[in-house]
Length: 231
Image (cartoon, rainbow, N blue to C red; front, side, top):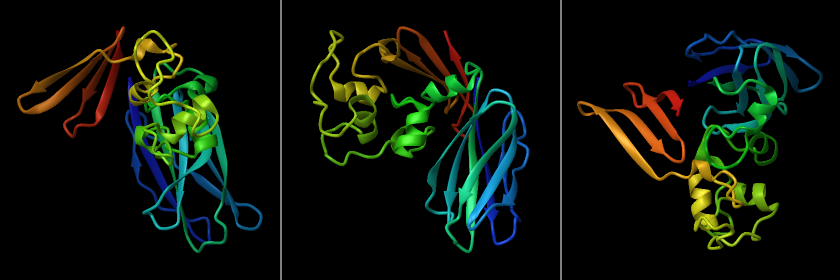
C-alpha cells in the first residue's frame, strides 16, 4: 500500500503558520517552528511509522524548491530552514506511506517515482522531486537522457551514449532511462512488458504493469493512485 500527502505552512516574522493537511490513512500532526539565529528557523514534527518525509520551500507559493530533507518513520523529526531574510516564506512537507519500506536506509535507497534514481540522490544531489518522475533535471545536453539519470549512473553529463546497449537485454540507455531502469540491467525485473487497464463504466479503476513481476495500481475516483499491489 502507498499513499501520498502534503502539509504546508507559512513562516512570517513570527512563528505563526497556516496549513492544510491532506493525509490518508493517518492524519499528519502539525509542524512547530522555533526561530534560530539570524534568518534561520527550526521545523519539528512528529513522524508516523513507515512514512517518508521530504520538504519544499517557496517565497511565492508558485515556484517550489526541493530542500535537502529526507526523514523516515515515527519519532521527533526536524529540519533547519534559512529564509534568507525574505518577508514571508512557505514551507511544506511532502510524504508518502509505503508498507514495503521499513527503515530509513530503505527509504533513502528506494525510488518512489520510478525514474531510476534513488530518493537520496534526488534530494541531496539533484534537488529534484523524488515523487515526480519528470523532475530529474531536464536534458541540458539534448542527448535524450535526463540529466539526473546521467549524473546518477555516469557521474557527469555527456559520458553516456543514449543508443548504447550495455547488456544483452537489447535495451538502449535511452529506453532504460524512459523505463526507470539502470544501464547495467540489474533491475530488469522492472522492465514493462505489457499494461492492462480496468474500467468501471467509463472510469479507469485499475492499471496493471506486467514485468517479470506484476505491479497493480488501484485508483480513486479522481484518478489518483490509492493502492499498490505487488505479485
